[in-house]
Length: 245
Ligand SMILES: Nc1nc2c(ncn2[C@@H]2O[C@H](COP(=O)(O)OP(=O)(O)O)[C@@H](O)[C@H]2O)c(=O)[nH]1
Ligand SMILES: [Mg+2]
Image (tube, rainbow, N blue to C red; front, side, top):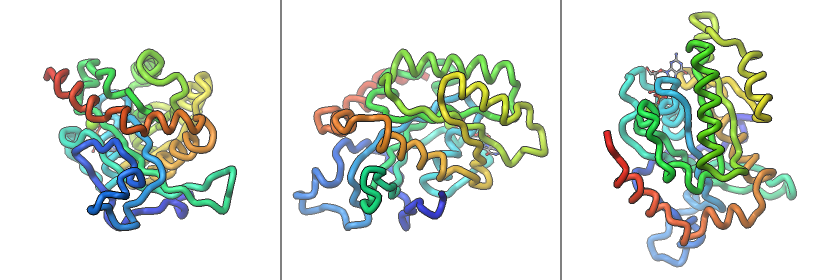
């Protein structure tokens, strides 16, 4: 699948939310060149315990960067990358989707993720660390799914990720079958990734984007989430006002 991922020459990293798709701004004189054009903007959130690799999955996907530093969490609220996907209803049509992927700023440590984080999200990647304690991982994963249930759109597309697959022969504590069983119980797909060596990272994000586009949502839902009146700026305000730590 990776050969279908349309990597931008310089994947874009944003610190400022932008709520309006490019084509809706195309009348503006400073409209970006073609390679920055996209058809839809999808907000996707990363969730999961601290230390599982959320920030590194984001930086691998958007900038092809991995860092061993524990502090990689601090920094961007979200980063974006445009990928090309196929429209299942018209396979000759290529659709460009801007994935706007939100990362926590470490609030998961305090269980203090705000509603604004989830608002408008069409997809969620629940990241588990295959080298973590099994019981804690599954207890917390169930809690993350409850949190999604409480705060996100009921139709949100969820992908369960077992990260750090490069440590397969090292301190792996949870088998693929065990995570698969957990994910299946919630009817979510499962994929193993490594932010370190890049395995399956593009595939994971692309599969969520494709599912959002092709299966899960009616066109209206996508339009509503993208609407200029649905305010990512409001989200930013909410986040600013709720930052506590
Ligand atoms: N071996 C390995 N280490 C990883 C991987 N992803 C993240 N890490 C390391 O795990 C630690 C936590 O990663 P980070 O992305 O900050 O996790 P977050 O707290 O979920 O955002 C860092 O030391 C990373 O270098 C991976 O795929 N393989
Ligand atoms: Mg982080």
